[in-house]
Image (cartoon, rainbow, N blue to C red):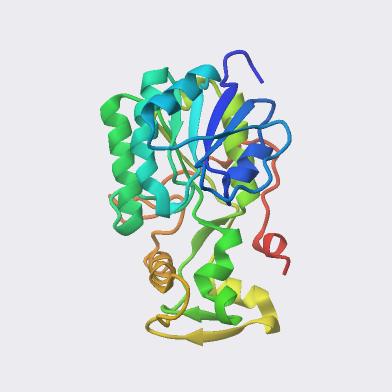
Amino acid sequence: MSQNTFSSFALLGAGTLGVPLAKAKNGATVIVMTRPSSKVRKIPAGAVHVPVDFKDVPSLTEHFRRFKCDVVICAVNHEHLEVQPPTLEAANNAGVKLYVPSEFGIPSEGQDGILAKKSEFVDLLRATGMPYTRLYAGILMDFIPFVLGIDWDGQATLIGEGNTPASFTALDDVAGYLSYVLTHLPPEELSNRTLRIEGERLTLLQIVELYGDNVKLARASRLPDEMDNPRLREFLQAKVETGAATATYNIKTGKDDQKLDNELWPDHRWQPVVRTLGL
């Protein structure tokens, strides 16, 4: 880790993405901040755990200053995006140098639904002058069973044709990549930058085929209401169907014309879907 790179991170959230990020710290000091009411997984060795109310700006400011945090990484899920504005206010108060917003999925710019909320927060980052790094990784491979409904009833249910390619990236690769670039690239190369990565590009039908005889394919125009989060699953499948779920999608042109930034993590071997899901 160079003297000209970031060395102290405040990680907001210790859930699906937060824990892998805390593990892949690349020699940096990591402060894992969680809500007092959160059911916290085991905090990785070497990380400091601080329970804090994410809406308590003075308390957050004090913690950011006490631990001399260079970077704030928001790893909360889509259900808790409301914590980002107060944590940004505290980051500005404490002199934090970079904010990594809760993205890590398909491109959010100009999109609707939960993606619009993510994009609007980046607009707020720009308005306040806080430098940011946004990371797009397509659909996390670990969530494929959720997207297809396999976790619900053991079969893959498609609401579209399933022939459109999308970007898929393993959770550990997302965490490892972010940790690497934050500790190896100089701040000026990260400031106000959107990074795009991809572990593998496949269609949903190709993924179903990877499951072989273990999973049956079903088709429907709508997922059943009794399914857990059916509208979110439909939303994600719809984005794949329209081509908007590649990390390199550009809504301004409606084309897949942006550049991948995988090469910023040199010599890394990206995990394929079969390895991530144990197929």
